Image (cartoon, rainbow, N blue to C red; front, side):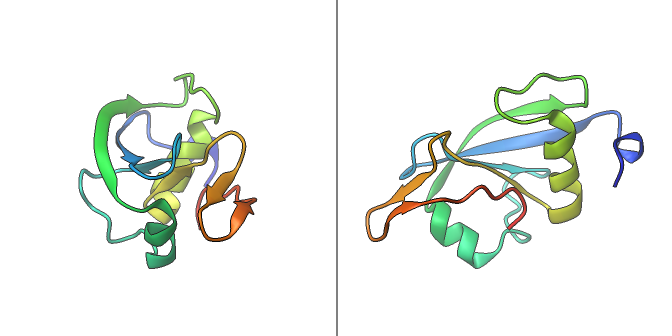
Length: 102
């Protein structure tokens, strides 16, 4: 999907992982986790709702381009924001994951 075919704006619901600092799961619909793979749910762990915002291609995000987040929400039904220094699992040490659409 090209940036020109993105909607002008869309709702975005952000959930914070309670076990992984700085890991956030973005969804296009509140509390709709059906499109999130079970393996990703296991990685993220329990989540809690943080906030909702209107996302558009002009919006500045801290770590990602807004259009990239929008594309993932539309194509995959979710977007995963990883911690800036990767993910550390208690069981497996450092895991280099940079996944946006599992």
